[in-house]
Length: 209
Image (cartoon, rainbow, N blue to C red; front, side, top):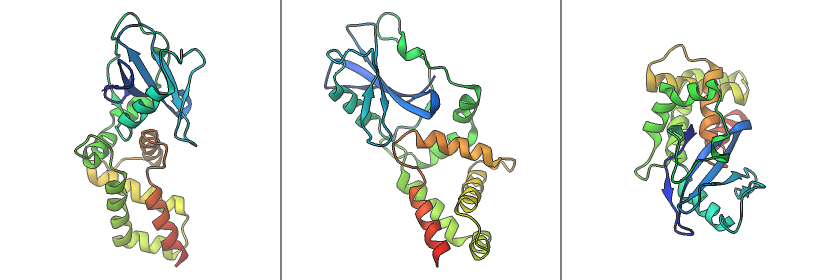
C-alpha cells in the first residue's frame, strides 16, 4: 500500500499512519491495540481537518486522535509499504486499492529522488527547500527567461521547471510532462497545501513584470 511511516499516538493507546485513498484523497488510519477494527478519516483539503468515516466509532476513535495523527504525519512522504496489522484482521483500511499508475509513480526514481533530496532531518518533506531550489533555477534559466519574454503560460513554465529539475536529479531525459504531473500530485497529497505554491507565485511575478 502507499502510506507514510507509522506513528505512536498519545491521545489514545494506538498507532496511526497516513494512507493514499481513491480519488486523490489522503486518509488517516488509526489502529488501537485493543481492537481489530481500525478507524479511518479523510483529510479535508479545504479545512485541513479530519473527516471520520461514517462507520468509525468516535468513542473509540475521537476526533482529537485523528487531529494528532494528522499533525504527527504532516509532511511525511508517501512510499510503498507493507500492510499493517496490530491485532486481528483489518477491514476498512485495506479496502483502498492503489492503481498500477499510482504504484509506478511512488516507486519511480524521480519521486524517490525528490523525497531524498528535499526531506529534512525530521523525515518531513521540506516545501520551503524544494520551492527555493526550483525558484533559483527558474530565475537563472535562459530558456525560462525566453518563455517569460514570449508570454508563455504559467503552467508551461512550471512544467518546464519541474521536468528539468527532475531530469537533473535522476539523469532521466525521457521523462514526460504527464509523469511529472503524477509525481507532483502524489507530493501534494502529503499536505493540504499545494507543494509548488511559492514557485507558482514567483512565476506569476515574473510574467507580470
